[in-house]
Length: 203
Image 1: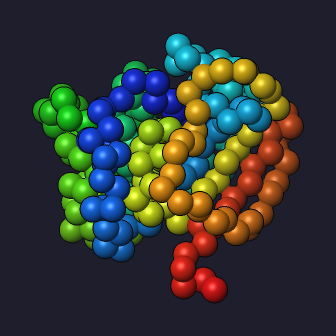
Image 2: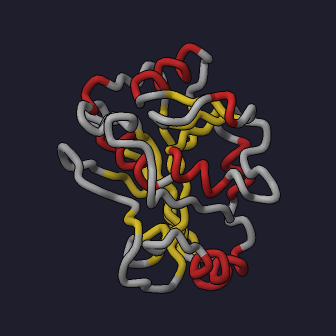
């Protein structure tokens, strides 16, 4: 399976970190699908992912390809893009990829569209008719959770504690209630759990 880290990324303002309340869903539903350690890290402090990829091999792609096929677009921060850009095989099939960055330009890679902040990205996704959007990378996930954009999380935990690293989750303006949908034990002891984010209309 593919997993991405964001140990360096756009400033928090590009991710909407200073004013998450301005980001409106406009029909955009963020879906998280990511691998992590049991202690909640998605990469070592130096960005290393060997601990994840080596232990995750037995799980195959862990349903990643089917998941990517189910989304309309991908949204990530600059740090995740910089990791993915060097992969031998582009993992996002033919899906539009949107990158949050205050320093990059679209012309740097024809495969991506760059947005200066989260509000611009959400507006562009909505205008393009994108509903289900794959949110990839730690800081992008944190910003979208804080903005109320995430509706679904699939977390694939590999059986290891790495002690320190880039965390998947961060501060939130309020609790985010989750509803358990399913849990499956995959090859190599990977435990994959999917949650829906409870909204105020769920009761």
